[in-house]
Image 1 (tube, rainbow, N blue to C red):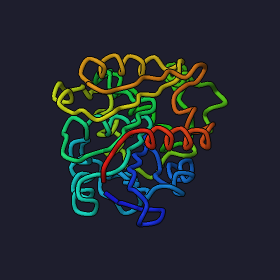
Image 2: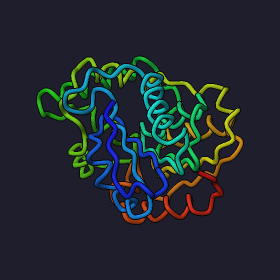
Image 3: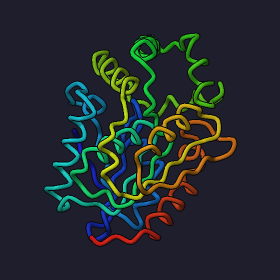
Length: 252
C-alpha cells in the first residue's frame, strides 16, 4: 500500500479512501479543497498504483491503514471520507475498531451482498474494457443500476487501467460478496451516510448498516447517481465534509 500526504503537517489529519478501481490521483484532485484545513492522508490500495503487487483483501488493506495511522498519528484522525469502495473500506475499519476515525462520511457505499455471480460477470466485463478499450454491451445495464447515463462514461477516465486481471478479479469478488458484520455495532463513531436517490444498492446497503450503527445520519441526495456529488460538485462536497467534521466534538 502506498501512502501519500498533502497539506500542512500541523493541520488535523484526515483519511481519504478512493473508490473501486480508482486511481488515487483522481481522488486527490476532486478533494484537494480540503487541504486548506487538513493534513490529507490518501492510501493507494495494493494493485492500484505503479509498482504495486496484486490486491489481496479488504481485511489486509484495513490492517495496513491501521498500522500507518497507529505509527504516524497515534491511532487517530480527525475525520475520514470514502466514496463507493472507499465507504466499504470505512465499514471494514469501523468493524475492526482498531483506530479512531473521528467523523466518518460514506458516499455511495455498497455493502449489500450482491453475490459471486454478479461479481464474476462484472469482473469479466471490466477486464474486457481494460484490455481492449471497448465498452461491453452490459456496461450500460450496470450504469443504469448506479443511476448513471451514457454521458457519464467519462468517469472511466479516473480509473487505474494498469491493474492486473488477478487484481481486478480479487477486488470485484471481494466487493460483491462483502457482508456487514454485527461487530460494527460496538463502534460508536458518528457516521454520515450519503448517496444519490438513483442508486438503489447504496440505499439497500444503508438499511443494512442502520441495523447495527449507534450514531448515524443518512442523507439521500435527490436526482443524483453513484459518485455524482463528488465528481460533479467537488467544491460543494469539500465544503460539506468540512462542515460536518467541524460540528463534531473530537479531541486529538
